[in-house]
Amino acid sequence: MDKVIYVGTAPGNHSPDKSPTIKRIAKWSDQVGIKEWAWTNLSNLKLSELKLKEIDFDIKQIEGYKVIALGNLVAKYFEIKNIEHLKVPHPSGKNRMWNDPELEPKVIEEIRGFTNS
Image 1 (cartoon, one colour):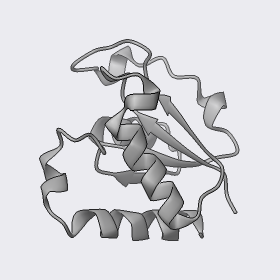
Image 2 (cartoon, helix red, strand yellow; image 1 turned 90 degrees about the vertical axis):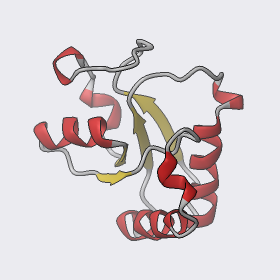
Image 3 (cartoon, helix red, strand yellow; image 1 turned 180 degrees about the vertical axis):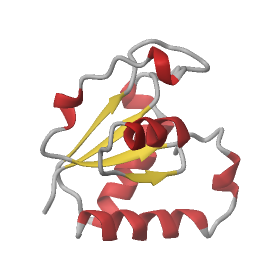
Image 4 (cartoon, one colour; image 1 turned 30 degrees about the vertical axis):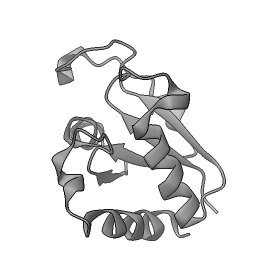
């Protein structure tokens, strides 16, 4: 099984152990059967609107991982850098896309296909 890393934009307002985003990612990983996964952000700064030109991301930290991009900005960054990734909607509870009950099962199946799980 592939190692997986989820990449977000910037730290949220919750500590990692209480983060709704990380809880959702853990749920996805469990449902797909991913035993080894990691989490990182494009930036360590808490910025409400991070710009692509402001990103100074160390690509080495994702080497050897299947990369799952959380949201549009992260996916755009990886597209520009020609890094293979799967784009999924950001798992934040503030993302209204998650109001659609059909979305999460689709995302889980996309992750399963991308990670060959």
